[in-house]
Image 1 (cartoon, rainbow, N blue to C red):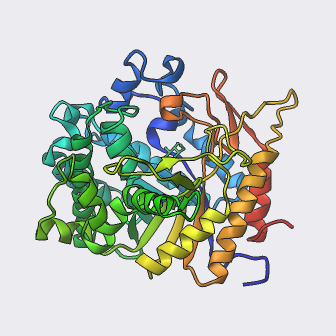
Image 2: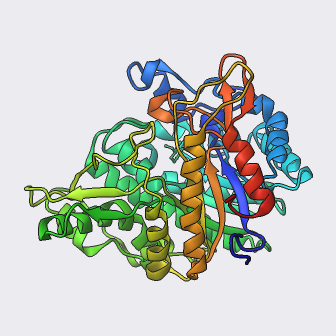
Amino acid sequence: MGENLFPEKFIWGAATSSYQIEGAPDVDGKGESIWDRFTHTPGAIWNQETGDRACNHYHLYKEDVDLMSSLGLKAYRFSISWPRIFPQGGGRVNREGLDFYRRLVERLHSHGIKPVITLYHWDLPQALQEREGWLNLDTARYFEEYAASVFENLDQSVDMWITINEPWVIAFLGHAFGIHAPGINDFNSALLVAHHLLLAHGLAVKAFRESEREDESIGIALNLAPVQPMTNNSSDLEAAERSDSFMNRWFLDPIFKGSYPADMIDILSRSFNVPEISEEDAALFSQPLDFLGINNYTRILVEGSNDEDAFTGNPVNPPDAVYTEMGWEIYPRGLYELLIRIHREYGPLPLYITENGAAFADQLNEDGSVDDEGRISYLHHYLLEAQQAIAEGVPLKGYFVWSLMDNFEWAFGYSKRFGLIYVDFQSQKRYLKNSACWYREVIARNGLIE
Ligand code: IFM
């Protein structure tokens, strides 16, 4: 590795997810998803926006792959919409849905771009939600069936598989805080959902191993953030420990150690029902993985709380920090700290940054340019930290910008732009932002521009 270069074969990519970009919610036999339902619930989403059209990627995927190719992307991370494949969750496969992803994969290959597929990025078939969704253990079994079918049907053409994207967000934002689909506000439900997601993940990994695939790898993508105490006083330190157990270790520990963090079980079980992990559960949770995907955007800074049963500290926004449009603190050093820590405590296994990026209030200029210097600076500084972690021995194999293009940002609708590519949602025209041109140069030289 040259001084400023990334390792040879480092995978430079960008990421999206099905509901956020595809549109075409009922085309070619697709079934309804919980996000189709949730976005049509009055008051659920900013400005009543929906993913009905989003980036119309379902119809514009060829142009989108051409744009990826023009940037020199080595890999593209996208997700499969489960209800396109199984409109009712299980049973009959919808061939037309599968064909869409076959065509997309073929097009990527023809441009020398590796497909990296996430099986579940939140769009559960509504038919399964009618049977209690992730609260029902059967959903994990349906997920296994769906995963096995996709492995078989996209045989030999996919380099990397990701079972589930951000199970923490699915469990807690969707079932404890009600701000994501299916909009449930019940902490006990969220804990059970977390348990079932871990089982679903394990069942899919097992199905993958049983299908004896060569040259293909499988992992999971977790949203992780370094947690830091506001001061070194014991109350803040303890608050940081708790927040870390809840935000990071609630999924890391079962996946790598087969158990929930003991300190958090202790706190949570004072007020909630923490699911027991049987021996079989533990074995499924901790199926060996080929890599871990890390989604990181910011850090979590906390101070102590007076409530003894609080399972997190109180979040603090440092006044002199800089924030993105999401209100997330820009803290590049956190990526280095996280990588070092994950490698030390859960390694050694290959790591990927499966998401990193920033929302800014981008403006399209009359000449079609977008001066998003803030995003360039964000990405540059996070990549510098990633590079330092690599130099210190962390096996970081690739990096995916969130996101390839502006898209539907869940409860925020279209109000937050994360893309390297600007999307005019009215005309569906795409424009390369300056950050896209910058990323093209980074990829071409396999290193940062000084
Ligand atoms: O847009 C989301 C993505 O779907 C999951 N990770 C975080 C991104 C930004 O909020």
